[in-house]
Length: 115
Length: 113
Image 1 (tube, rainbow over the protein chains, first blue to last red):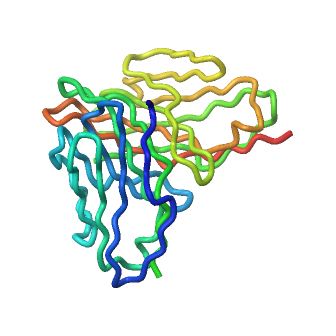
Image 2 (spheres, rainbow over the protein chains, first blue to last red; image 1 turned 60 degrees about the vertical axis):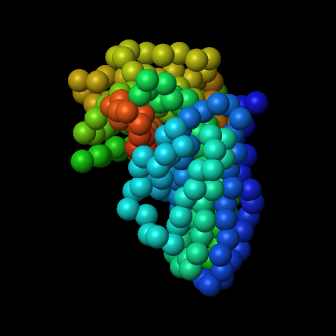
């Protein structure tokens, strides 16, 4: 199994809603990531979890709240988002051994629209 | 600071060869990765270099010069399906919690018949 699975594929939410994006991998990877990607732009790193601990938070607003319940799952909780948060949210995982991170495996993304 | 530069757009003809350049100036370096991303899809891994020189994988090759902060991706025998964005990404130095990847702006390649 070499897949990273993200749900939902599409999400439309109002600015007062609370929703969550989910990501799952069964490759035994110990690093998991959330990236945000706007149209015609490269992915921008939001959060990194290494060994289920938050290791990088790239100054992301608190309306985005990550969670890593176990080594296979990664969630992104969304609350009080703004229209400018509309984007493709990509989850990725990578092998991690003795401080060396292998290539990223991306999920297909969750396309978020905030009205 | 982190600065990675790629041409914004390139156009080539089916069957031709195209070279996509990437230059970088980053605070740490432990490898350069190339990803392909079709419109509306997730990036997929193509190739990576950690030492100087050329790495070949079928129709795709990638080259790295660490002293020049320069890499290129070479695509041979272009096919229409190669129309996509190509992202170079620099991997940070190792740390206790692993490494981060910084992506360049991407190059949108259009392959014409």
